[in-house]
Length: 143
Image (cartoon, rainbow, N blue to C red; front, side, top):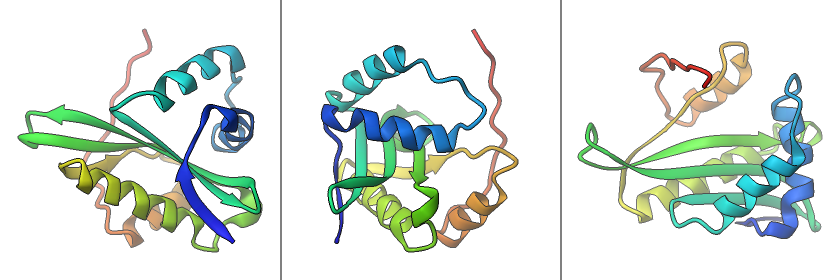
């Protein structure tokens, strides 16, 4: 039975496997990622959720809450959302996203946003079905 729950530090190794599916072309620095994961699990401004099926993590989603002058309040940003390739199309991503949106609403967010790479066309269709609208470009600069 599928369970959506907050992640704990013990979930790190399974979450990293999922992130490898999300970022197949990225070399993951596990030590650096573990530091970030631990900091985020303990943060009041971030939410990490796991979708577990029979104690196996098959999905991961994260949300960051930030102040927004444009929103005149809080804004929730979905940073990651990944479902194991073998479990896609079964509603797991929808459940994770619904939980993040509910948590953003509980924390007083006025809007939830996310970004998605150009090549992730199936993800774009999924987000549109969930009521998200493509309203901007994302610009980024490596430091």
